[in-house]
Image 1: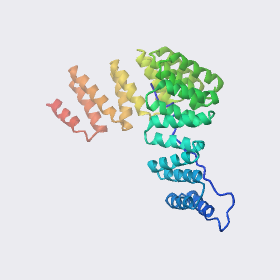
Image 2 (image 1 turned 90 degrees about the vertical axis):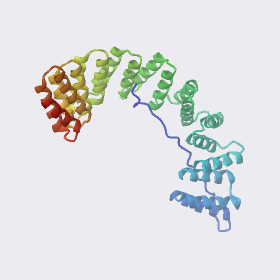
Image 3 (image 1 turned 180 degrees about the horizontal axis):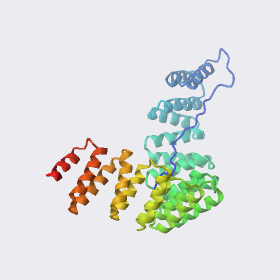
Length: 348
């Protein structure tokens, strides 16, 4: 099934830079903390860490400073150091500082420590159960360990919090598909399309789900419905042609590919597909025309299509036609030594 519609989030972290409420000259920790924050805002993270550590030694709030140090290491992509700092922030807060818990979970995820990430997300969600993004990331972590039930449970929690979030709808549906609950996935996406009719990609996704189940007529119907609402999508025309060809409707698929090429004459993959279908149907002239169109666009697959036509002609004892096709192939691919060798061989 096509995967392009699915959304994967990069795990974020909370970027909360804590400052001292009032700063006077004699308040060393506060001055250091604010200077460190200024360096952080300038993306001078290494220097910021040095000042944060000094502020910590002079009595600054260890929860806030450890958290800021964790953010700085994270920005430097020093994830083990970031993990240690966030863990300190959690410990200093006696497990009550949720941003540090979620950031800890995110770094675990970055380090591919998915069970630890799951445990941290669950810990944070026990405190803040309505945190939408955390449920999404928890679902991603379950996905990484191959637990579709856990992923579905987490994504459903996010869906309950925001049932109109398009990305969540796709994720919940994908989780249903992983459990082979295709009807639930279809019902969810169809309902979402009625609620958000401008999201035409829902129809494409429905077609993908039907195709996954080998329901080619239903898949074609969904793709056509999407094309009706948003015509001239050449990639969608290609998908429709692919389904039709798989459903043994080759001539109709060829018409769809020709339509795609009428819209975008540079769509060389459609030309190759058209050539291949014509070749299978032994419609040699149409295959040659399509392969030549792709050859003009420098598509390397056209080389093999034209050569196959030449071999078919030679197999039919039509050496003259075979040589004509090879010479045409050589014109578009002059550096291919095998073509030159075949021409010399067949001329003997």
